[in-house]
Image (cartoon, rainbow, N blue to C red; front, side, top):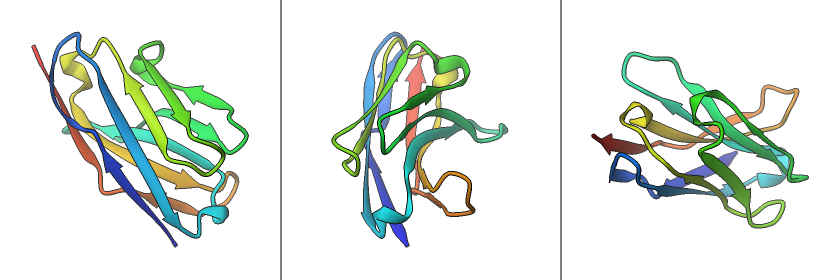
Length: 117
């Protein structure tokens, strides 16, 4: 099992920035990809970005170009720097850890990000 703990969410004005962080513990060698997803009210959960143990990154969706995912070493905490935030970015942001190509998949409890206009 892998436990994920997120931090850094909160309330920010449009145009502002936030940095989310996710720390993993437990059987962290059972996963090789960590990332961030978000889910707005009434919408499906969607990928924001992920990073592999090798440091390869992937960005998706409307936040592409405004976010940067990084990691302190292959198994260190994963951060998501979010800039130029918009009210439409308001959502619960979830940390995810998985082993690519398998059903091994873990979620954090989520952290609320609210962007006011």
